[in-house]
Amino acid sequence: MQELAPGIVRAGCQRINWYLLQEGASLTLIDCGLPRQWPAVAESVRRLGRRLSDVEAVLLTHAHTDHAGSGERLRRGGARVHAHPAEVPQARGGLPAATERSALVYLWRPAALATLWTLLRGGGLRLEPIREVVEVTDGATLDLPGWTRVIHLPGHTPGSVGYPLEERERSAPAMPW
Image (cartoon, rainbow, N blue to C red; front, side, top):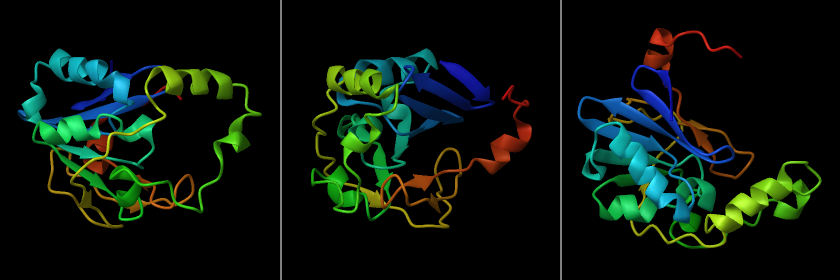
C-alpha cells in the first residue's frame, strides 16, 4: 500500500490496483480488483484500521473484472456500487458493449502476457454480477467519503469515468513523476 496524499491510499499489485479514500471513519474505494483479489482488498481495508463495513461506496471507473471483481461482495457488505449507465449492464453480468475492441488488439504489447496471466490467476474471466448499481453521470458531485466529481471519459469502454479529487490534490505533496 502507498499513501499518495492525506486520506488517499493505493493498494493492489503491479498490474491491478484500487484506491481507498478515507474520510473520518468512512471509506470509498475507487475500483476493487479481480474476484480472487478479495482477500487483498479486505486486507487493505484492515491495514487502515478499518472494517469492511466502513466501506460506504465503490466507484467503478469501468466494469471490467479487474476493476469490478469484488464489487458484489462489497455491496453485500453494505457498500453502494456506482458506475456510469453505459457500464451498468456489464456490471450486472451482461456482455461488454459491442463497441469495445477485442482483447487480442493488445497482445502485441510486451506486458500483455503478464497482464493476461494476472487476469487468469485472479479470476478475471468471470465477474460475479453486481445486483444493485447506482448510476453516476458526467459532472455529478458524489456526496460520499472523498467528495469527488464524475468525469465521463469514453474510450477504453463507452462508460469509462474518472473521479478527480481536487480538494485532496491541493494538499498532496508533489509526486516524483
